[in-house]
Length: 91
Image 1: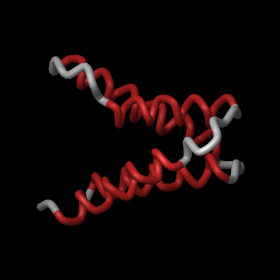
Image 2 (image 1 turned 90 degrees about the horizontal axis):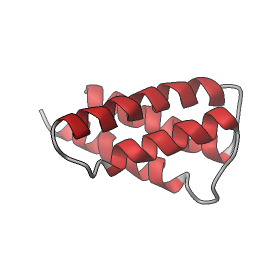
Image 3 (image 1 turned 180 degrees about the vertical axis):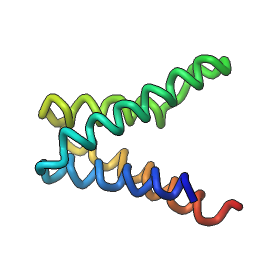
Image 4 (image 1 turned 30 degrees about the vertical axis):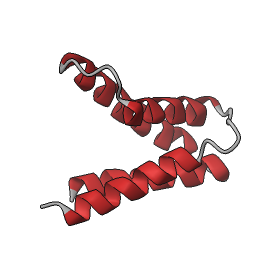
């Protein structure tokens, strides 16, 4: 269930990348922290290819500083949908 909640956060980030709003900075900080913990955790376990964590880092930086890469919003949306499905199906 927690994974589904984090997936919903990713969907909100994707929406904020399409339509920047007043929550963009706050969501940027949250997703930047989430990506930082994910990347540090994967490096600590010896896995150096954590593309989901790097997507969070890039999305967080884009939301905080207000620059946007065209079509990048697709990646957090797909990642969020995947996390929601996995979080609700796996128990």
